[in-house]
Image (cartoon, rainbow over all chains, first blue to last red; front, side, top):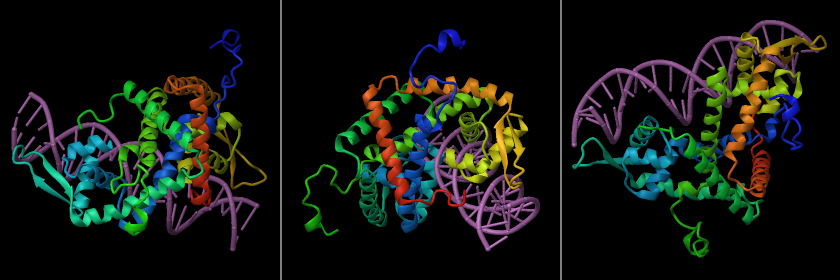
Amino acid sequence: MDSLSEKRNPVETESDVLELEGFLPYRLNVLATLVSQSLARVYGERFGISIPEWRILATLGQFSEMTAREIGLHSRMHKTTVSRAVAALEKRHLVARRPNRQDMREAFLAMTPRGQAIYAEIVPMARQFAQDLAQDIRPDDLATLNRVLGQLMARLKASGEDHDPDA
Amino acid sequence: MDSLSEKRNPVETESDVLELEGFLPYRLNVLATLVSQSLARVYGERFGISIPEWRILATLGQFSEMTAREIGLHSRMHKTTVSRAVAALEKRHLVARRPNRQDMREAFLAMTPRGQAIYAEIVPMARQFAQDLAQDIRPDDLATLNRVLGQLMARLKASGEDHDPDA
DNA sequence: TATTGTTATACTCTATAACTATA
DNA sequence: TATAGTTATAGAGTATAACAATA
């Protein structure tokens, strides 16, 4: 990194100082934290549902019946996180388990009618939240955003494939 | 929200099921978590620096001298988070404080030469990380991404202005 | 009275390790 | 031996409340 050979490039990002507020990882993190907390407040205050619990309901809303392992894979959560969130949902009778006779180590999980009722209430709220959030964004910009987020995800998955090796 | 008046809209997102993997808050959260953890591994393993500590160094790299309160405002961290991270950096002699004679409640914080040396090593690594991450993204898409992230942030700040009222 | 900063404490989410019960 | 899931425990990161020192 000696100055003679390195400092000639006149690109604006070349400097010894990194601007935090323009640094993509920082921006993503701040935004995602704000978004998650705001959304969690929406369903948290009303239903006492945590983020992992919401993700489990959302997954079961899509797939009806799933094992804990499959839920973890789909919603990108550690098996211990899933285990505890499922236990909490079970205790509140929002989720129930049905044994798998073919493999008694696992069980099929599904929402109870009560769970489905809460799910049916949360979904429009979540969708409204996302819509409010994006309401000023041009549709083509939103499409670009989603495409780029996908590309970034793919890039990360390609390099560090160690999110949760045993789940 | 009665079905007669609401369900006629044939937009594709209208359904009782919400697709988690296409839901913006979820996507942002997963991506940001992966990005943060990957980056934190880069400077964490090498220098034993946490995310809040890195943010403080980054802020002091931009502004040379700042109070804890100002650092918190700039890097969007709670004052308790800043206080603890500064204490850790002080103990390792990466940051030092200079009293403000005009107001003895606060102190000006700055990196020591040792802190500056670590900062100077981290910055290129961080920049390289961000560049690797974005290397497949078209420049105009990246520009759109940054613009849209800014719009989303502005939208969130406009609604829920309760991030850290007393900092 | 209000503000800067610290500390005690707690909560959420995540993760490792040790365990059980099955396979 | 390996896998699904649970539990104990610990680690980040964040937050509230109580406090000391100063304004």
